[in-house]
Length: 121
Image 1: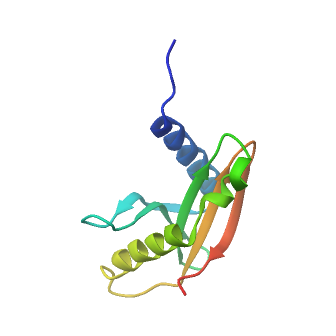
Image 2: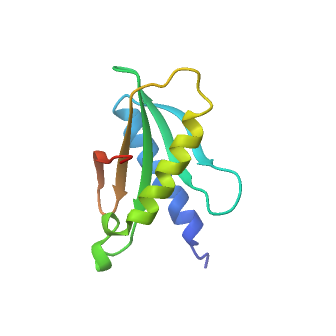
């Protein structure tokens, strides 16, 4: 009997979210973007919306149960700040700053895509 690790479940949730976003027309720019050093941040998916050239920073959350607020309840203020920190680090490498937004994809019984779920403020 093979056990499924948290990492495998997380990877599967990211794969499902990526498929969902690509089916909606977004294009993958980067996956699992991490800032260097400790205490930085990570962005699960960086996508581009070709319709308006928006750069979309996507946090994918997966929970097997709805306890403690489910997947959406796990995106704390600290988690948001780390994502924003990583996004700023990524954007510092670009010559021209595109329009940006922070989306969340919840992978539970179904996939829920929350556009502009939070902002950098």
